[in-house]
Image 1 (spheres, rainbow, N blue to C red):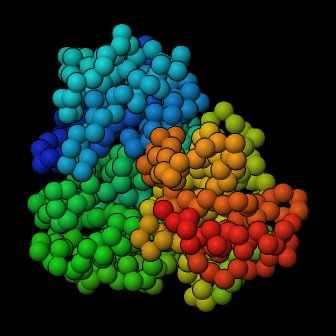
Image 2: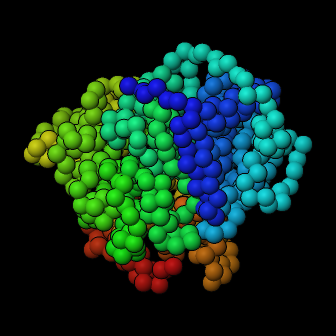
Length: 561
Ligand code: 7RM
């Protein structure tokens, strides 16, 4: 399947946000990976050891991941937008020995810092022996005796390195993702099956040809970046674009300028981005030559039919196939998706399981609902890139995925089977929100809120949001013994951003006197969602005190942020 790739073929066309570029061929990539592998070995990193990677979207992110794979070390990439505290808890959980980071990266037209967050985290992580720092922006950084510059070590290292062989079940990486409790789970993937399925799906779902220029706009900090920037495309010898920055820097046509400049033929992005471009207007993409595009992909959240059609018409010129790919951090690779030229598509449906994948839609009892029915999405047979567990927590692995029905993998998504057997994904059925294609748990945000001294109690729900899929809405009871200023809401939003990262900042925080609870003390999120989505309230008869809802609905009119 994988083509014979010559070393001169371009692996990565890197485009920095300020407009700087780098061309990395497969020969360059191998040399860089070899050098980095030698440095990791010199620093005492051995097969099975964990390495945390906290980098912007620069080639060194892929190089670091591959250097780990080459020596059998397990990488744990932490999204550069996460806070010092989020980084600390991930380094700590995996007991990482080495952290690879950068001074910073470019974001929205200016250099943003990364190193200070690493310093803050590493100060509390005794497992870390060294920090390897890429110089990307040239900003001044504080320095400790654990720190080493990438350009002084990797650039000077020997380019010769013999790849070690490992068992196909050797661990490849841990990637943290939000679950239904406050603590993110470290999803564990291994080597052989993962690489097989990412390469196979990247090749077939994108109908990859030798002359293609592929661009996946995800960040390597998410599973989409792992599987469809690093492992799948590079195993297939594809040429790809890697872009560091935001879509509206320095102008709202930046993506389409990149497509035109590199002749991108395959584009893979998220519905949130598509809806944002729809809002910015048709005339922006119309200013660029997008005729090189021949296939478009979507991932991360359900794509609404309007966005699907706009994507095809305004980006794809009206006649390109669109592949809506459903999968998860846990599945490692695409599971449900059309195959271009094979599957007739319906706008908004991910259609059918890929060859070799067994998915079903079942009811509460685990019975298949059949055509026309709705229920829970399950995977009924194992698959090559399947997660192998949750790092350090076997019990949580069993409870999360196998407790409800031992014969099925429970995906956590609601789904509908239509009369033709096409699958429509309906979003999460658990306490996981999906904000702009990013998984964030309600409990994680609640924990962040209650860790603030002003907060007595908090409940968080995901409310439908036209742009981001879901938006985070928090209901907060302040402590009566604390003096809250007028800026309490702003302070709390900032606090969540500091505890988790800007992506977890609530869209709205409502200060309320009470929360709706059942007689057994469970918060009724369904009612809070009704309030957050401005719906009339559903059944309130199971509430311990039905009058609470009047208080909350009133609070809505002045609690807005
Ligand atoms: C790849 C990724 C997984 C969750 C998943 C769904 C949602 C992802 C689609 C989708 C509808 C899609 N991994 N999701 N893709 N929903 N259609 N094509 O996103 O672990 O971060 O999230 O995302 O709810 O369970 S993830």
